[in-house]
Image (cartoon, rainbow, N blue to C red; front, side, top):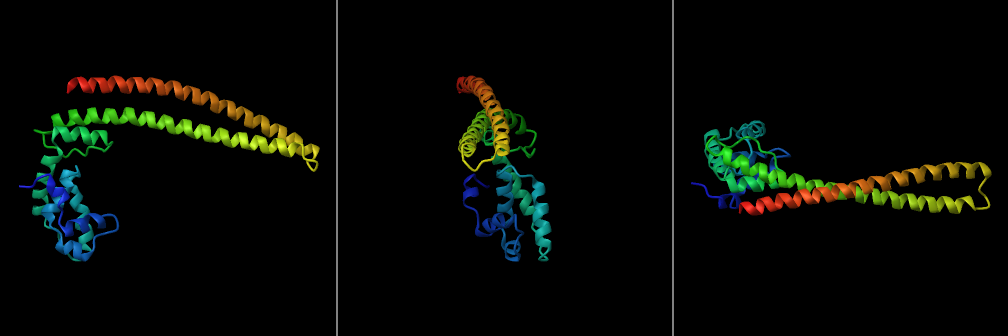
Length: 211
């Protein structure tokens, strides 16, 4: 019977297989992979059993046929590890997509934990996304300030024509409007951040009460 530690103790062929997944499997990997271990790895990571179709296609190019029965046996054992309720929370909290691999006797409890973890992920991500947008707004405002400073210097330069000054005044007004828009947007985001922080805190308290 496989154990969770088996994921960390993969055979060399299985490691080669995992690394070759994107670029295409080598003939050696197709020939030497322990397909039961490969199946366990995929199952324990929540990958669909249909993943073997990719291996079959890649190995067919080398005239090799993966051991489907061994893969399925290992995959089923890996799925039993993956579908534990405690792991469901971790999978959801990581933001990973559940691919519907859990059997009916394990799925309800797994999904309940998964949805809780995923909700926490969503709330934390919302805060990070707001912070990223605020940082982007601040960066653009810094750029605008630098450009306005440059325009101010150019306007008083002796070689600047009257026509150029008119254009600079118009452009400065546009930059000023954009700067104000960013200020208002940032204020709105900051209010939203406070609300998201409150929602996250309340959810974390709910989780703590369940422990």
